[in-house]
Length: 138
Image (tube, rainbow, N blue to C red):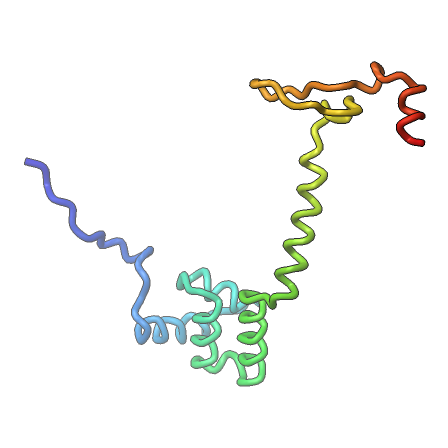
């Protein structure tokens, strides 16, 4: 009979409890010497940006003004306004308009339909009489 699988004891990938994380974080911050403390703390303890900012504020790494500024910036980046969402949607739709033009359709003056295989059929530009085209424009 096969052995039943239980919980993994892999400590490296399991998140720490809050109090333990703050204790370990205080020791880690004292030893830390690089510039990007927010990014590295987040990677070390596998946290979200807001949790990282909260921990670093409680460890007195960030002052209140800097903490509030970063939290506000994070909320704005996560929750764009309706206006910003509308602008993004318009930009995306414009990009897709150019992608949707089929090169075969540019060969046709008039597309009558599509075959079951998806190929267009109709009147091509070279099949069109120039006199007929001029009459259509008038």
